[in-house]
Length: 94
Image (cartoon, rainbow, N blue to C red):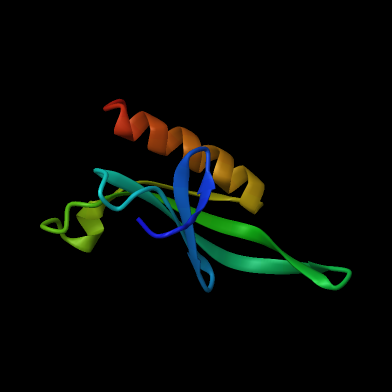
């Protein structure tokens, strides 16, 4: 596997305003989409993040791949719920 940033032992890959968390070889991954940002000083921070627990089963339609969805008011909160959802799903408790 390529060298990716890890969060709680799982790959974290960002492409623009979309962040994928988890290993695509597993049954589930998380997709987080930054919906809006706020500027604090000279830095931008995500203030609305959509979270989706998704099946990696490509035989499913895109709509059926989404298992759970939510929206949080910060990237920190989104990462927190993403880690819980992914751990539970991979343990078979989604």
